[in-house]
Length: 335
Figure 1 (cartoon, rainbow, N blue to C red):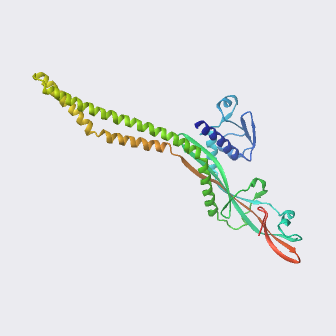
Figure 2: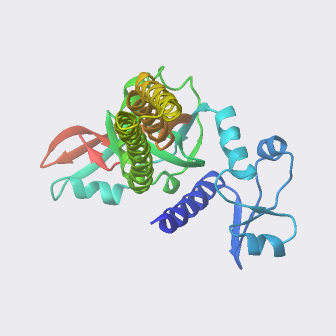
Figure 3: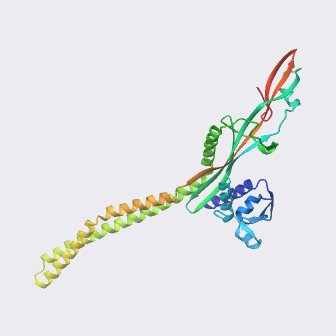
């Protein structure tokens, strides 16, 4: 189970790196992930120029000169996380798209003719990038997830297939992203719940093992103290019995002294309230282990992008009648 978790963590680290450097030049050969063409701002931040040679096991690391060993909590991974946290921003991008008249004509009755196509305002959707950080025991993992939202609905759209350029905020009205952000935040929480399932199972197993150890330890401690009290009580009874059958004053004095010492010992054991004390200690250690095995999750918004694109008004003629419709070229929708 733990080995599978470790492998899963390594895969997630690789996904995290590939997502972060998706616009860079990446090659993968002989267990070495080489990354070049990196933004200068990242090179300045990390204090090292590309190319970066990333390896994922100690054996390869020892063979490849100037390589970066990628493992949970490694300097390189933490540098990416800190860079993202430092660079959180909102971007504006304009999608360049025009209707495909051949495909568009399929939306209209046979014999319809497109007379005119003209732009009629803009529509938009937003994309939110989250850095999710999971921390438990001595492990820390992170992943980048992006959520696309339009009209309070999560989209399944590959933006890499779209052509866009830096947007001009003068072209569109001010856009309120609060509702979209709430939708994206709820979505990322649901995604994280699925992602942390193996981690939670591992923590549950470890916690149950530790709680069992603590419980058994204090059961043993209480049992030992109980036995000590019983031994002390038996010893007192035995000494008292001997005293009743002793006739020599010297022996009587010794027995009376031993009885007093045993009674004092018994009184101390009972006065300390060892059961209550040990129960409190047990509760403290149970609480401590439970906290140690808890999973801390932080979802930080590191970037928000607003994509806007032109809507079109299509004038068509069908059976001598003209009518106009609005067309969304990104989602191929006619309204």
